[in-house]
Structures are given as C-alpha cells and as structure tokens.
Amino acid sequence: MANRRGLLASRARDDHFEALAQWLGVLAAAAAERRWTEVGLPAYLAELGPAAGGPAESPPPVGASSSIQATLVELEGLRAAGLVAEDEYAAKRREILARL
Image (cartoon, rainbow, N blue to C red; front, side):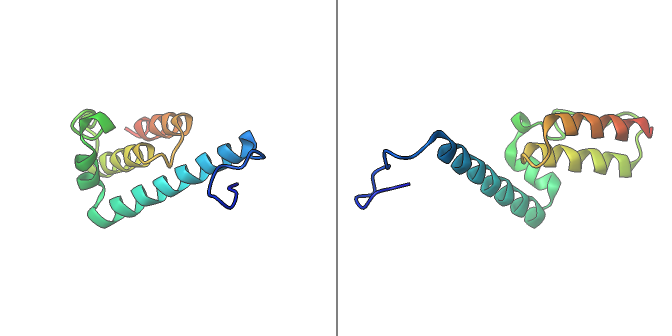
C-alpha cells in the first residue's frame, strides 16, 4: 500500500482501508481482552469509567443470584471491549435475565 518513499500508493482502494480498519479493531479488541484478563473484569470496567457502562452505571437486577450478576458483568465487559455486537449483547442479556 505504500511506495518507496513511504507515501500512500495511488493504487490503494477503499477496501484496503476497510481491511486495515478491521484489523485495527481486531488488535484493539485483543488488547482489551488481554487487559481485562490480567486485572479482572471489575477492575477493567472501573478503569474504563462510568461512560463504558460499567457496574456503577447499570446496577444488577434486584434479587439476582451472584452467578447471574457475574454473567451480566462479564457480558457487559465483552460488549465494552467490542467482542460482542450490540444485537448479540441484547439477545444474550434477555436470555440471562429470563433465568430470574
């Protein structure tokens, strides 16, 4: 994609940039997953802050068991890291809450 001087080649197509953007997203998601496995999901969500939709912003449902709470927190972390699409997140969240 670059010529000898390091400038962007005139032959680069839009799909080159789309592929590059996709790989950058994959790398960012992998880095996020690596970080939250190192420090633990609650600490990782705390690092991201309330804007990331961590537990401070969305309290667990009243009367939920701790395993359901942990599953919801883990699912939220996956969504925040970009590892789960919004539609997958919503469907899985409904499935988890249906267990209550």
